[in-house]
Length: 266
Image 1 (cartoon, rainbow, N blue to C red):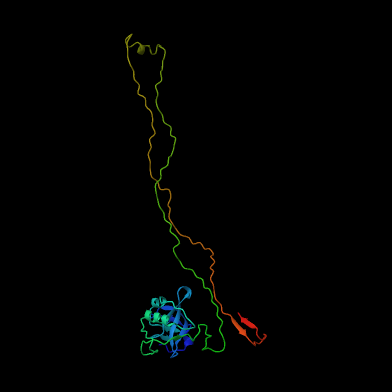
Image 2 (spheres, one colour; image 1 turned 30 degrees about the vertical axis):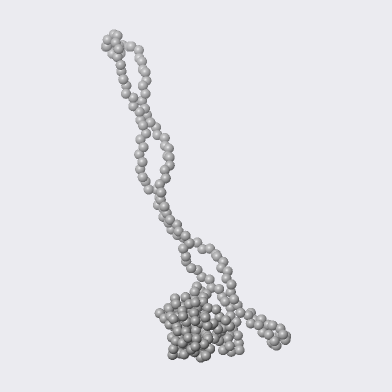
């Protein structure tokens, strides 16, 4: 059991049994019978948006550090309970005791030397330090929105190479031979060749014709390198969240006002 000033416990930093930070201590609940600190709430979750109950039994308090006897995950996963008039109901109290493996006996009062239960947990200390155990002044508090960023996967990009076929046309000149009929008159220069054969005969001459045809050869050449990279782009996003703020009203004979009027402190 923590034996320390309740006001010092509230707002301190809670650590688990392994020394890991859990969160900030919010409210402290006292036992109806003994008046000793019995339970505390710890702000957990993203930006401390959740509040979990943790027993103060077997806990220790040193300076601004509250060390509880349970792991961080155990505290964060504690059952959510609702308060009725600043008290834990018997059913909610039983749920918490069973969750933390503590004995629950409705016929036994709180005893610091055993694991018995209390006859009811009384919320007598306000989180805003303006409860019934404080002085005559009230503390007005407001919630503040703290917005940060968290990295998460937004999509994926990949490179895929495939082959496609297209038609390429190119004009190339080609040369071919064709037969041409030629004749020449008999002259003194060619009369010998013209009369070297028989006077009358049948004969045949053949000429082989040639032509060029297109020949296609394909080669592979590298043309460019392609890779994937990332770049950061910053854009503005608006976050809207509800925040609560306390207001303090003064009624009756208040200096600066008239009887029966209500003054509001914002």
